[in-house]
Image 1 (spheres, rainbow, N blue to C red):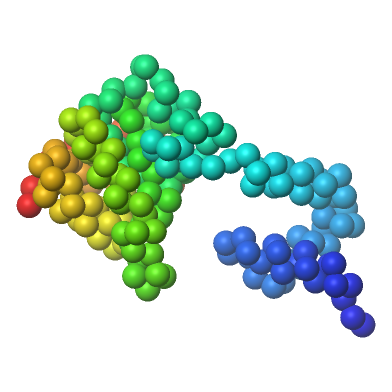
Image 2 (image 1 turned 180 degrees about the vertical axis):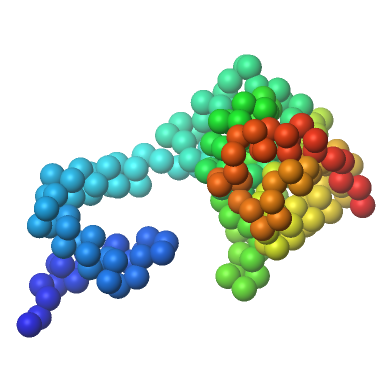
Length: 199
């Protein structure tokens, strides 16, 4: 029996999600069509609206509906601190820990040559420009994975060459761990015990 082409298209579209293989995509598609059509329509609408209205903040590179996000516009943030994180989930975790009141720059990834992600894909020229706009300390809060460490080292070398003060969050976080999965107390301690990076 042939699968309807629109169903095949839906299954194929669901496979673009991380960790979703052919069987999982098929189960999701069947569930949405058979058990939750209102949910499917809500998902389709929300996805369409998000794609149309969300872009990157001109300052921090995080997702935003405005040109400059609410966090970057806030007068309550300390502009003398600029924290570099890999992903928006890491920024949210930092905010939940309530240990940091500075500004952010979200890389939207990490250096990974095997995956074709280099300095250009991470918009590091924007990071350097932002760090040079106002004298600040750049706090590197990339994950303690091989790629996260390589990214931190690369950024530290880049910024130190420009005379920018750079620190790295402390290793209160487990090696190989990701910020998104760390409790807020551990993350707060790591930020408070950050160390300066020297070349």
